[in-house]
Image 1 (tube, one colour):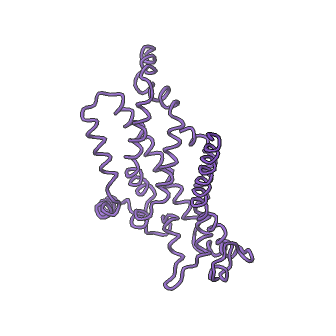
Image 2: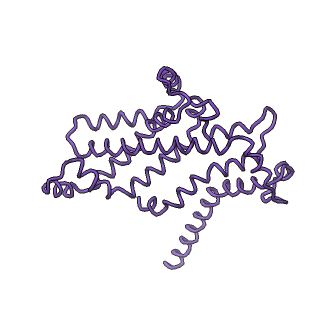
Image 3: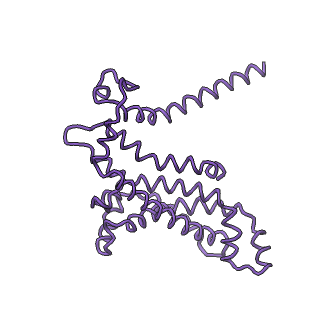
Length: 269
């Protein structure tokens, strides 16, 4: 009887996993299929799941916009944001867990409150400040504000990780004459490699997909990001779904490549 129940639970579990994977993966699979569909297939009723005749015209049309330039801009801005966010987040989290700073809990709650603010409420003051500082339509300007918005999540994540590292490691290093910076860079950071990779991927994805800030702060074509560039394929009366799907596939390739390269580190974190 117990084995029969166990078998039923296993079947239900596998069924749940299969349904979950289908829901998560099916939009990506359909986007891949749609990127190779001719317009007649996309407008067919009932909708087609697979193309009747594969074509690369959608990919050719996708490059009518400077798509590679947009991808390059997004990549540069995202890498700068990740470096700033991870560097500041590691130092802040280490200070919060290893020093006797007063009102640490209040600071963490304040950081959490900032992260809950909708981006649209910050656009107006950020735009005015950036226009006076000359940071509009620059890579570094957009990267700075993106890293600031992702910093609260990074601090909360890394603070929990730092608390899980025994203080005895640092006490032993202190007896050998190491200062705080040496303990941080040579002892703590190597232990956090997997966790840092994990939060870096989250920051990378968040920065890559920032639409509103990118649209408002970087309006010049040479600084436009790829998520904003995807909206330019739409015309007044039509949306070329096949072209958008092809451009979307090109857009997600960097994200997929990063996840595949660092999947072991992500799982470890």
